[in-house]
Image 1 (cartoon, protein in one colour):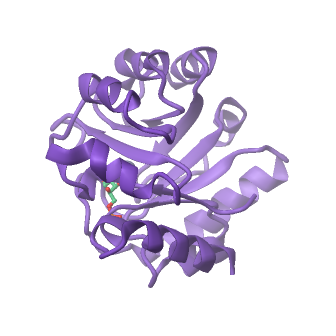
Image 2: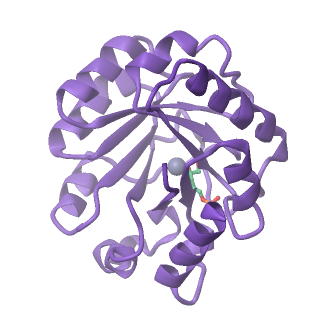
Length: 218
Ligand code: DX5
Ligand code: ZN
């Protein structure tokens, strides 16, 4: 699959979300929305009301990344609201199969996220239940952190597991993805790239998105 870029609005201006999303609307594939509850991660961002509001102002589909303690309860609500993709964390979900199926039944793509220290071996049986596997390449909670090279072998391993089963599962990397690190991620097998500070910290966010995609495709 051609590489896709999902800019994270965690690095945008929270008081001007619609304008900041419009900045990348012609360049990006998705808008990555980081939902944090101050329990699963030590930070608090936004929730369903803001996502519902943003849906009315975004030309791009929303890629909702739920870093919350109770995704089984909340993920279906994001899918029903109209999110294009909803990712729950393997470390938090108590009934992942049921929740992933509910997300899909509501018409959204279902994602499963794993933290840097969580292995993908053991999750093989869930690959048929998902449309995307999200590998965190920083500890979740904050933008602007340094990419963790230690995750690279896991990207390769995940790509091999997906390929062995011949499944159409996208492989997303999230955290520290930039001009310096995106080629390593693509080479290891990632095909969807979240970038927060590398996009919204740039003078021209749309140009930054295009440059990242070109690097990932090279
Ligand atoms: C971190 C979030 C990321 C974050 C990435 O927990 O899941 O999506 O916005 O930010 P950068 O690209 O700056 O590392
Ligand atoms: Zn994220």
